Picture 1 (tube, rainbow, N blue to C red):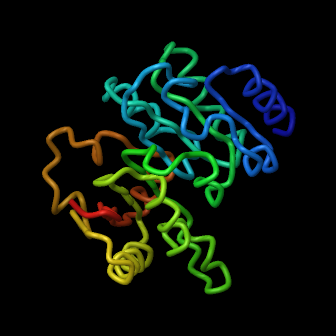
Picture 2: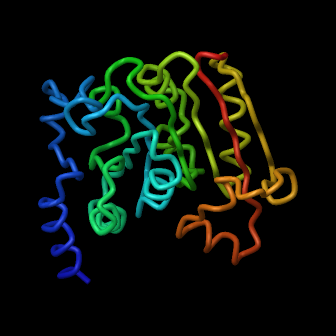
Picture 3: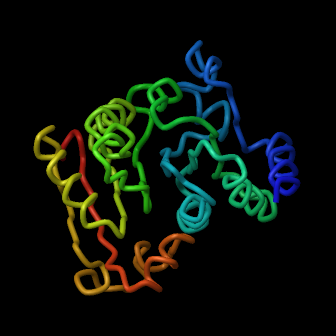
Amino acid sequence: MARKKLARFEENKHFPHVIEPSRNEVLDHFPLKGKWRQAFFKNDRPIVLELGCGKGEYTVAMAQKYPEKNFIGIDIKGARIWYGAAEVAEKNMENAGFLRTQIELIAHCFAEGEVSEIWITFPDPQIKHKRLKHRLTHPDNLRRYAHVLHPGGVVHLKTDSEFLHGYTVGVTQVLGFEVKEAYHDIDKQLPEQNHLLHSVKTHYEGIFREKGKTITYLKFSPHGQ
């Protein structure tokens, strides 16, 4: 397994669509900040992020489904990113890429208003209080997302954790964000009709569904509209 990981790390280095800056590089004037469209994608299409993307299932699937948009999967674990990156390379996709960095640095990687949408799919709910600040929907993180989202931009949260779903609803209310959609059970409350929430399933979603867990969804905007 260690050899496979090392091989994947090495292969990531040679994928032109995988960016792996050091923390210092991100903090010290990251060159792609504010320039993702022209310098990385070479177009002027909207940018969509998948945070904690893991194997990048949503990044790849959304890029295929919506060629009129650009997609970036963000995760700190390079061995996981490799799966999505390899698929993007195999399919010669031009509107998908991956960034290996910490989510807390997102405002150093993207300029104010540079992003149109953010997807968070099945993150660790970090239930223990001492892990509170590590929740991807902690107020500090939501403020970071608000900074990089353009006016009217939205955040999508898909999770099996009723705890995280409820916690996030509460945080959005405290911060004054507008909740646009909220479902406690997408299978019962949301007609399928090839909806993205049904048609794309992550590795973890498959595991949770096998255990009979309910899948929730929340869509909200820091800027309203």
